[in-house]
Length: 564
Image 1 (tube, helix red, strand yellow):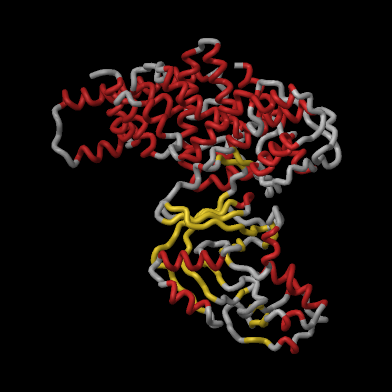
Image 2: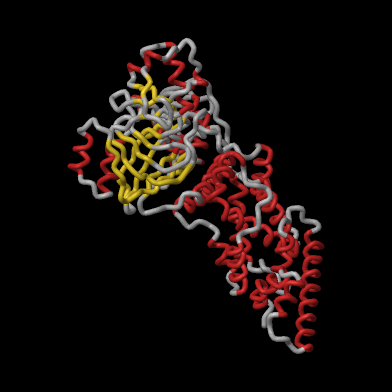
């Protein structure tokens, strides 16, 4: 038996060690009595196993004594004892593949612990401390497996403000079993590769990072000029603007050289066209004029851009692709719908303002409501509507609101019987419901999505807000500009005829139609991605979710990375 084939003994060994000796004795009393010689051999084997386990733990403690990031000492001892203390990371391809995945997590800034681990692994490799490298790499693999497993349930906290827990739990039993099996079959490289997402979004972001890193060490000037720069404006530092646009790909190399060779000192049409491309990729109005927002994006350093790309690569792990899915990207204020792998609709959306954020979530569209009532959420009622009603006694009636006894009752309270002078918004004992109609806040359509936060998609009568570039105005739910088209497409997909849909639209009665084919919904938060044309897009961090790492830590990591 080879040393690695011993791995198969570990589950049995762990089971034996987990059973108290008294329990083992009781179990033996129920079985035929074995010969004394056989029992003596078993006891000797058991004793030898305990000795070897103790030695393994002592060895791990000795090696790990100088590695302050080691976390899973007992599990390391079990694994290395099982393989006869053979190094696991001798294959440089496997080690490099794992380091690259770890580096992407480190660059994202979501975990100071992973950043420390990555930096320490590179230091051990550079100093040829292979024993420490091997042990730390294996311990880090345990942590990384736990991170990947935890993303579906913990990603909303880890990747949107709080960062990854410093002390991750041990990976699941099935994950550890899979790792043992991979090592036994000499397929650690395959196991490591499987931990990295294979979808196109993640891959394209990695390629974008690699491309940006190639120019990150080049001269990266600072461009700053006050005021609005329009065609004909004299530039204080034209080469700085040219270089930034060239480094980011909005000016091709030969175009940049032609502009330099011509000695351009004013803001001309060539630079304006390049700036329009730049603005388009950053979610700005592509008018070619350099104002405060465009100037702010031009000042963003390559290191900051790389961190944003790496962070969004980690976020992309949370939203697996499906043949039919509806995706709302909150900071892009846009919705896209795919059915059977075909893109069928895109629409502008309005999302929650920073004080009432639209949550990141995954659910399904379950039904479409025609001419919906709006049961006003308590927070909106108290903060927005009741103060208006107290100032303007006709406000509720004029906007179609009814006062309802409670959430468990449909009894209406006559508005004129309420003494608004004595009423306090915080202690208002009733609820509000707005009837269907032109003033209804939900418009003509509501798209129900099961979730515990009362979030849904809906139409809106306030169409003018869709003309704005930044569309974070709602109280959390998502307003869809093309709600009419969305209703038709979803219902057609579930077998409801176009004639039937038009008939329901022509009525004023409230009607809920369930969807036979429910469509997956992802409300996502991506501030960077690569579009179908291969262009890297960035968007403003409207909820401040990208601020996960301190500037000093950011500089330290990038300084070390580029020193390599």
